[in-house]
Image (cartoon, rainbow, N blue to C red; front, top):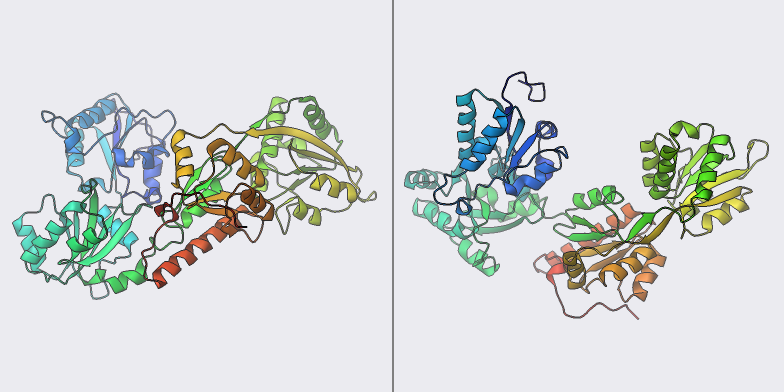
Amino acid sequence: MNPTAPNHSASGQVTFLGAGPGDPGLLTLRAVEALASADVLIADPQVLDVVRVHARAQVDTPLQASTDEASIPADVPPLRDTANLVMAAARAGKRVVRAVSGDPGLDGYVAEEMLACAAEGIVFEVVPGIAAAVGVPAYAGVPLRDAQGTDVRFVDARTADARCWAEVGASDATAVVSTSLDSVAAAAGELVSAGRKPDTPLTVTVAGTTTRQRTWTATLGSVAQVLKAAKVLPSPNGGQPVIAVVGERSAAAQRDRLSWFESKPLFGWRVLVPRTKEQAASLSDQLVSYGAVSHEVPTIAVEPPRTPQQMERAVKGLVTGRYEWIAFTSVNAVKAVREKFEEYGLDARAFAGIKVAAVGEQTAKALVAFGVKPDLVPSGEQSAAGLLEDWPPYDPVFDPIDRVFLPRADIATETLVAGLIELGWEVDDVTAYRTVRASPPPAETREAIKGGGFDAVLFTSSSTVRNLVGIAGKPHNVTVIACIGPATAKTAEEHGLRVDVMSPEPSVHKLAEALADFGAARRDAAIEAGDPVTRPSERRPGSRRRARS
């Protein structure tokens, strides 16, 4: 049965959904479809953030289900409350998604819930997810089989009995052991006692498939010492789950070549982007592809102009044929014009017969989303100067109108206006919106900025430097400072910051690429020196960074 189809029975239906081991990108397409049609979402807390973004805003989340038995009163059977919630919502005719970590077929509690649905005749389906025992080794660069077809055994150390350990220990199969960090050594001891050699290679991965992932290579006999030397144990977080892979396929030499995830240039870096989440969307995606965690902090807020009459006259002139061109220099300018259009009941058809210019790719995308395809986007530098290089001079023979409508911010520079006038055009330079300093970010974010909790910050303009320092304070001296160009770098230095990375071009994507190159070089230098690879935030000297003299 298609769970997204209308349900004609009195009861609803339940989708038991596997959310995978942690990486949001590992959700299946079917899982996303099911989440989008859910009326009720009941998710294990460790995957709630992964699945919630794909559900409707109106979805009901009555309980963050938990598989942590320690949090359940002794007189309440595990997951009984969750099972009751699932059944009650289904009886009420709701579409229920029950989301669990990994794969639902490996969750014994979920099996009980499926049986309860079957007993009452409630329609249900299962959407498999990537099990941690399979996904985590793949992200750790540890293949489980080779061309010779090595056997693979999966062991849950929490439920394994003496017979299980004896069978796995007596074989030469690759063993994938699900256990906790502080129980790895005990599991290794069980395998050695059952016949595995103490020098059998082993890898231990914590927080697999996430940017917190960390993998250690050891042997069955040395794993306790390796984790102690790495200062991982003893730890109050020793109960966190890990995947240990035992066998020749997890040898250190092989993992060095296959560790594709943890070797990303910005792996695990927390990168501060002083933009709104909407403005930073494509940049954040790029940073994630380098292994970073992007954290957006708006440094400016956009407000309507103090005197809207000028903007109103310009929009009316746009409709009546006053302009030959309209030039958009930012996404905010597109938004301002679009909002004014909607206020007057206009749409993209009002641009008919008018040439449209966009200063760069992001502005062009905003126009396309509005239903307008730009006639001119700079072929080179994405800036006012780049736009002027491609802008045609006014020609009275071919251009019936000599006027350009330029909606922009109140603090915009005069570069574009002066350049257009020089090309023979008349310019209506109109304040479409005002930019003001944004409100300070939450206290936790401010402390992370000043205390070295971020590994890098990307400054995309001089105003982002001034505003971030103004609303949140100066970044700590360990934080890598990356600037989009010389003017921004100068402003950063004036605020006592040392610039570590400079973009080769005035492009946010080139800036992110330059930061990735910096991270890769830093990583390579650490490996060559025989030092552990660390993030900048893992070094916390007490003094702030000063600008170079």
